[in-house]
Length: 101
Image (tube, rainbow, N blue to C red; front, top):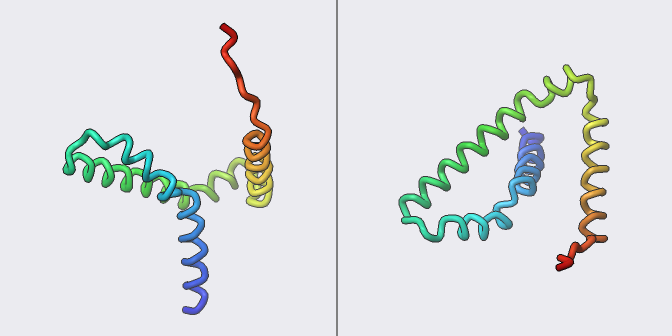
């Protein structure tokens, strides 16, 4: 039983970072500001159900798909880290495009 709590905490924190509810709240509010309260509740419920289904599907089948593609978990983690590093570099050294009219 003592192993369950750290595993749950790690999974919760990982999902919290991936989903980013704090960052998505302003986007949600901007998209539903002109809707009724009932419609807002329906949209929020639908979003939670769809995102939970997608996370569950990938959680249950992700290892199977990676195994069948011949990709090890370590290779996937390294590739994800490289991609995140590239995105971070692009954000730091942003190239602004200006209209030349």
